[in-house]
Image (cartoon, rainbow over all chains, first blue to last red; front, side):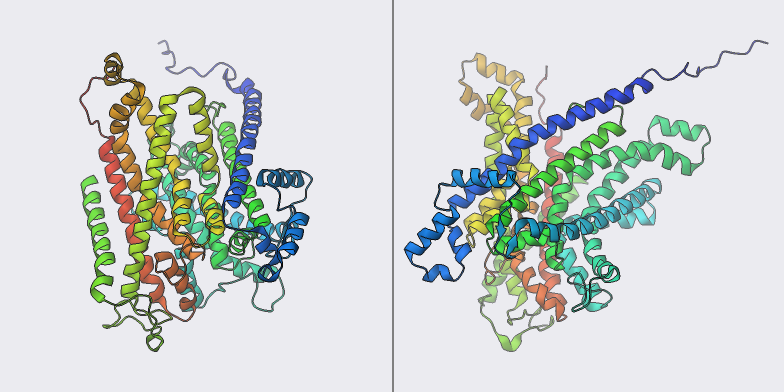
Length: 348
Length: 273
């Protein structure tokens, strides 16, 4: 009896695309990074130019900001002298170029609202913002992956029936309302957690203090980003569970756990990575609101302070910084997609 | 499904609008007048939603706030839709270099967190309603521009356009007689979908103390006040304005989504090439 030829022959040797593709993909990704960085330069310049143009068109007089109360009493000659010293009597395009030049040499200007150089404000506050954003992003990503996978594999179960409408409701709630709700319930009603600042009043800065004060802001920021992330994971998991390679893995008798985690989840992750990049502006906005409500001493709160106090040097720089952060973030997400998925062409 | 969303959404929006328009008028009280003897009262028969820290009735004040917020949001949504439709159509029709430049601008506007642009504009032009509206309208037109552009691009290759061109119609006549009307449903859907964003933005700016002045009731200023009242246990100062905000945004989003599904259905029998 002759054995029938196998229906599926194992591929002879390494798959043709696999081995040599690694390097060109990385090269293509690197080229994409270069192209996108070049394209980002005019965007960043245009945004900062727009901010300066808006400032020039507005009734706002930079001298009023500089002099504060003395603005009303200072004589015209004094005002002119100071304007000449500060260079605010020059036409705004010249001021803008001067600002750009200073920026290039590392001089970020002086923040009036905080009474210190912008660079010092940055050094003092950026770490706290990064801590808050990193912790809440991590919480949101983990929750989205766990709950998204869970609800996709147990569709129609009670978790699913609870999570999906919950997400819709959260999508309708602005982050500051969620934050206020958290303050009302956990801070005032139950009095479990502190609702403001980094430490209790008068307490020294310590890891335990900061961790306790971090809980509510981080959770609120995570919750405000969660619906989009979770629903995307659920949706792409459902799609990927219906794909042939997952059916194949099941047919080979692999454990359900392996099928879901090793075969379905990886393909479902790609849209998730792209979404993470696309959601960055919302994350920045969420951080602004959460830091403001919880008096978290980060950069996002400084945005609000600089706006209410019309601290133009700080406001202009923070706008620039957040634009750069958003552009870099979406670039990072696209690079990750290209490196993770061999099917995506690196021409974005 | 789509019809239920549409019906419920429209009913909620109509109810909110009626509440916002009628209650301040029927109640006949100025929502700005303080009555400190009645400050911080919990909801009761006389004050359905309770009172705020200045003793103002929140049932009336929430209605007044909702009215301002819905008005500002509607104006913003319409304005950004007009900007987006014009830019998108021009970009698609002009094509080539202009199109590429416009799309770069769209990318640029999208790259800045919208709220930040809004904060900058509102901070520079403090307290002006025009600045608030402009700051929202100027940051939200990009989505509409994209939608209208792609709609016009796909329409441009239809036989009806060829027929008009062969019939001797000038370029701009084709645009405003054939392309824009055909893209109109999409643009209107986009306008409805912008409503919740606009409500969010207005309330957020006012909440941060950059939007409307505190005595002017808007959902944002009400929630700003709730911030301090909350710490004294005044949960109602948060719950009712927040409820109005959530209902308005969810209803507008539901109506927008239902309309979008409806418009996305094949709507003409014209033979495509």
